[in-house]
Length: 161
Image (cartoon, rainbow, N blue to C red; front, top):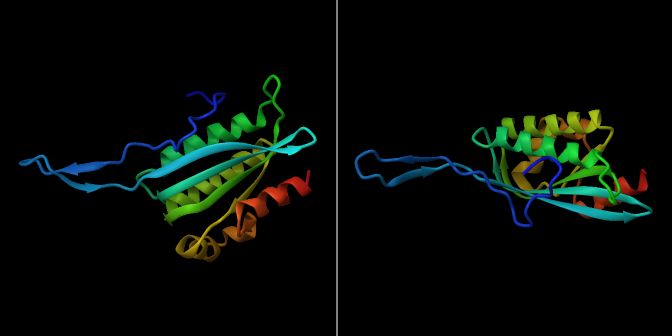
């Protein structure tokens, strides 16, 4: 998949890392998985917003993959395609994220900086429980807007265009 192709409709999942017992070849431990799904939301008047929904756990095992995927999708959002409206912003939906460590926060900050360089606004939405708490404790809410629901973030982006 290139930066200009839409991802498949289902979640894109990197392979989880697995340790195997060398004598029995049994699976001992499986690493965290994170999924990513893209949806382009038509906001009317020739404007769209890219909604990127994450699911699972974001940690050191998969944050590099996530950074590359978010960067490619943000780049494609800022590029005008024939017959398609350019995106006015990006919403990262964290509703289904169960865990996010420092490397996950780094991936989100890199996505924010890349969106800013592409002249796109980026909003976070749907963080719950521990994920919401860690985002607020680290001060991400001072830089990025955190919305309770993805629809609130979409409305905020649409009202600023």
